[in-house]
Image (cartoon, rainbow, N blue to C red; front, side):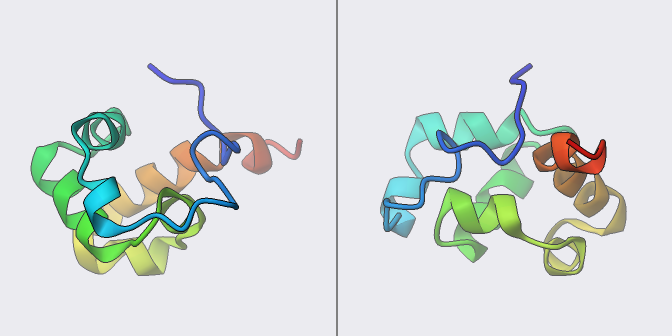
Length: 87
């Protein structure tokens, strides 16, 4: 598993990210490593969020209509592990 927080390699501030870039097989595979996210949810998330940065910064309320409440909490927690611990 990837040790992720909202790190610069996943949430680049200088990349404009297009939907075609996000549907790259490597990006799809990366998103599928998030707990609670399989191929279908990963594709839905990548269609909704135009960059990895947006996905990383999405609030649970933004994720919930796409993946449901439980998965939204898992995804948000995954990207914000370090900040949730107070670091």
